[in-house]
Each structure stands twice: as structure tokens, then as C-alpha cells.
Length: 153
Figure (cartoon, rainbow, N blue to C red):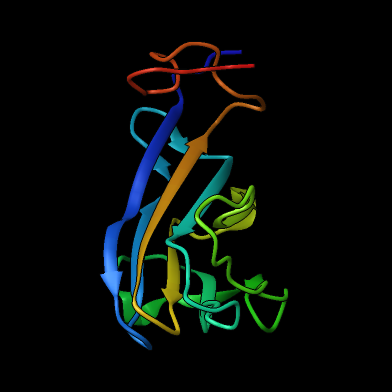
């Protein structure tokens, strides 16, 4: 299996949002010289919250055929509060599980663009990282993963 058909996107790059504000970013699932990616893993990471009830009010994925955010529609199965329960926020920076949320998306039936949307209840810094691939398994070298380094256990 060839792993050169792998790409990382950063749709939300460590942005601070106040209560009720929205952080969102669009992911192009088309891989140059390869075509549409087959799968995508999206990690949304937020800083610790003051109280456990300060979980996000919005956490979802949308899709569309253009990059116009107003044309995006929710993807069934990926809407927090409707399709899954958004867990309480973590308040301890030393806890094993931090405020991280993962979406694994089979892209074969999806539109070209995905949009991740996150709204906090209190001011938080949020990031989102998407890894797209044509392969059925993960890359084995940093170069194949399109990264500066790759650690494996």
C-alpha cells in the first residue's frame, strides 16, 4: 500500500473564542494528484474549562460542494446534542482525558468539503486537525505521513 496519498489539514488553528462565539473551518477532502480521500479523522481540541458544565454548545460536522459556509449542511451522525452526547468538560489540566473530540468519517459518500463547527460556553482556545487518506491503514514514515516526525508505539 502506498502512503503518499495522505494529507493533514488544520481547519481551526488555536483560536480563542468567547462564550457563544463560533470557531469553524473548512476541510478540502480532495488530495492533489490523487482525487477524493477515502477517510478522514478530525480531532477537535479545546483548553480546560472552569466548570464541567462548560462543555461546547455546538460541536458538529457539516458538508457542502463549495467553500461557501452558508451552503454547508449538517451531516447526520455528527451533530452533538442530536446524534451524540457532548460530554462534560474537563477542568483539570493534569487529567488523562482532556477536552478532545474525535470524528472518524468515511468520505466515500460525502461531499467534497467538510466544515467543523465548535462554540464554547466560556472563553476557550480551540483547534481542529484533520488527517485525510486514500489508504486503508496509517503511514509508516514521517515523509509518508506528510509530517516533520512520526512516533509509533
